[in-house]
Image 1 (cartoon, one colour):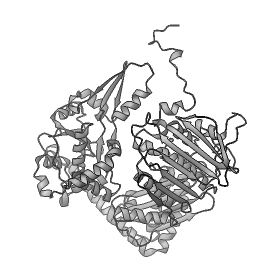
Image 2 (cartoon, helix red, strand yellow; image 1 turned 90 degrees about the vertical axis):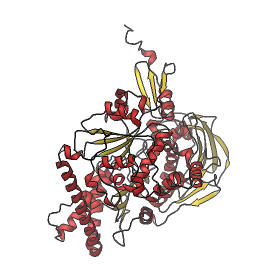
Image 3 (cartoon, one colour; image 1 turned 180 degrees about the vertical axis):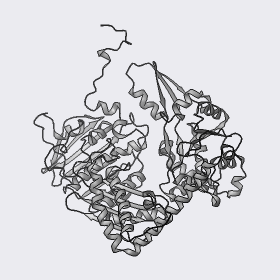
Image 4 (tube, one colour; image 1 turned 180 degrees about the horizontal axis):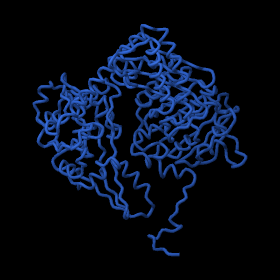
Length: 640
């Protein structure tokens, strides 16, 4: 047999046993080793405890954060994980569950788990694999048992501690610093997540003990998701269109709860849950919810012969301003990925729509004054959107020469005028601007270089901010105007992309620009036109292969994934200006390979507070913010 093919033979094939695949590729199981991935460990263990509640075996869950913030205890009063020996494998069920992927009682056809947050059977074992130490304490059958694990492997046999009249499971785990760059949990993140869960599970007694501050929080919310909706609307700072919300609950068969209310917001805000787990990526159930809202409004308008001459009302117009919560419980959920971000059960679209739509139609017909207020709000939204479309069409009809009047001279514009494909890159410095101009696709990509750090406009009057030439050029290039004269119809580019160096200075410039947009052009962000580019910070060459790492954590993850004896070379980019045009295009400009993060405003209040703290005139607030937040903040979780 020839060995000319690069020495590739059977000895190069690796077989990962036990929980080795999890430690080798943690991102496949928890989405990443950043702050979000770290906290996902907590959600996995809590979800297992909630499964006991969902199936009527537990009534309370206590989550405790260690005093040093580097460990979490999750305790429930459920049945307790079985500790007897498995007849086939000769090990305790507890050890099998915590050291083996795809093991557990959720695969069988019995009634151990009628509703469960996850049927993959990997949650607890994944947490165990990524923890430097896990201690499992079980109380069942009149006794208390304990077993210790380290980095996914049993550290001794299961111990019988003595008699116990209680029942339940306690899991104490500490994340492995060999896997996670930072292993300190954020108490605010944990509390917020648990608080949301307690609205979905109205009968569950949920307690959070924060030993970093010495505080205990009772997070029970017997008011359920109607109370949750009230909180979400209050937090948004928007006024509801109607006095009372629509609320629906079905407890027989597959449980389903839905609440919604129109507000004066310019975007929709729907939250969906499956078996108590937040599906931030939506899915088939959320699609059915959206469809139910649109169809019930259309049916109401048709029934009552409501027509507006010369106006076409779209689904987007109908859902504008809706704040809603949907919670479904199904026996066999099919999630997209282990992080359970999106539901894929195809049958759920029709089931949710078929349940919610007639109930919402009936509510509209029984509350005619509220329904008319909603329809009036929808008509206003449709008129505003139509005016915006007409303004965009007017801009597109202008000739290329007219389109370029009064544009800044340093703007390298693109040839296309089609909003759905044009992009404007805001680039730091002339060096990076030169590379971007050479590497871009000049048909639909424009480049505007910015000189150094832009002006800090936080707390500054608009007129004074626009006296700055850099900001004035930026507004001219975008084309919408600013402040009271802002008109989204004049927007010249579908995407406005902040392309800065992947270092502290680059992040600072991005923050300054985001503050300017948030204060003076917020509709750009709300309508989804502002993005952050994610350029690489490191280049890793392994033979003929090249890997690009966004940051130190990503670099460490790539290096850990290489073969044990692989030779590699790591080089660090000092800035985008030293990248040649080809590399910049391949990693950051080309839509086929680049990564973009769309900027969103989740909470106006939180955004306002963050910009005041970061960029305001009071250094004491900035110092406090840095001391409290810097340890857990990274560009990958920046979401304003």
